Amino acid sequence: MEIISFENVSLIREQKKLLSEINWQVREKENCGILGLNGAGKTLLLQLITGSLWPSKGRLQVLGEVFGHTSIPELQKRIGWVSTALQYRIHESETAERIVLSGKFASIGIYQKYSVEDMERAKNILLSFDAKRLIGRPYKLLSQGERQIVLISRALMADPELLILDEPCNGLDLFAREELLARIDRLAAEKNSPALLFVTHHTEELLPTFDHLLMIRDGQIFAQGQRKSLFTKENLSEFYQKPIRFQEITPERLMVLPG
Image (cartoon, rainbow, N blue to C red; front, side, top):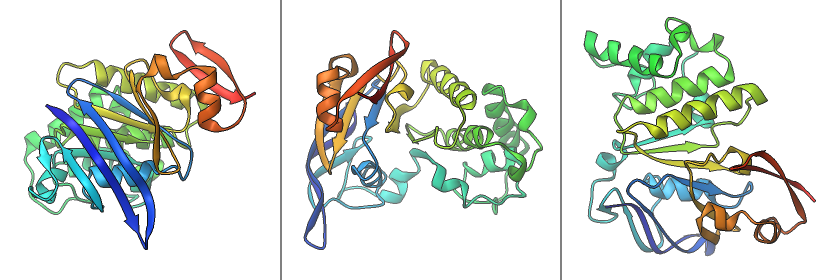
């Protein structure tokens, strides 16, 4: 099954093409990175995938459901989206495990009845991220990295088939970033892990598990394919439209710096 399929998809607002002729597929068992600078169209692409926006042209299919022939609210229940924008909507006095539990209901705060088993599962998800220390702690006392762990755990509470990590390392210091990336890597390695999309404008954040890559610039696909074939100095210089140089973090992780 194709997790995502864009066929000649465009997004037009006020006679302006914000996304143009997107043709892109993500297949089952493929974890994909999306690379682009600010304003490239990454967020618009995510809003189309999650049904927050509707394509102006073309055919869009997500998790086997074709837009125009499916229930978007039902589809959205199958997708987890972790974004720093969500952090500002969380109640600061809410404890970590209650925030995780709220993912079961796709709500901010808990207004429905839940079982003891539901709460235990929320705590166990945190434990799977080595985050026992967060249980019982209010959101306002959590660091930025701890908040991201809670939001990822919240998304997993709903057993999503697709998990979108939208610039999850924003605002993290070097050590918190590496800790979060290590935990995402472990999540990707789990047998029942959801399909993962990792959105960033920093090449060094794209772990080896994200071996498929979509590069987007000015609302258009610049390139797509295997990461190792796209991560060349020539290709990335053309993508960024400036000279660049590489700094190797590991043999499979490259940081791009101004040339």
